[in-house]
Length: 160
Image (tube, rainbow, N blue to C red; front, top):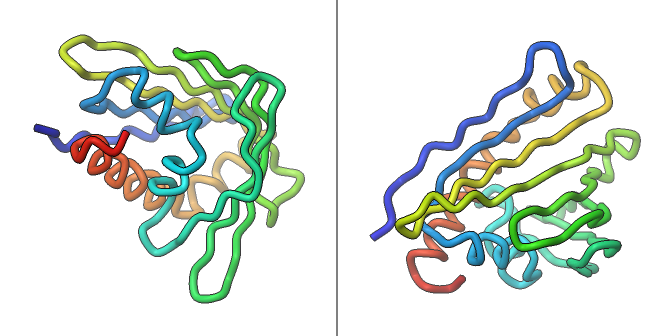
């Protein structure tokens, strides 16, 4: 049985960092797979209103990725590089095509809490406090919350 989990999105007042923390009823291996398997990733990432298409996906240290999210004929592209991929941690860059100068460095970690629970911590370092605040104003929490809710359902259904 899967329980609803709260997502914490926090901004350090002095650093251009956004930290997202969320607990899942899943093993670290399941969360790692959900973040590295392109078919699974496309099914859960982002807001419900957007459909995600993977353009390129090479989830290995030194690899890269690109996906496009679309709604009503409008497309939003995202791309980045995987700097480190290992079962407990992923380090990658993240760039929205609409803001090509706004490259974020993201570190995701999967902490085994025992009893089939895992804490996901995602830390995004952006180029400025203004850039961080723009991300926070963008409505990113809707995509984060809805995406993680989809991932919860996939985990509960045994899809991951």
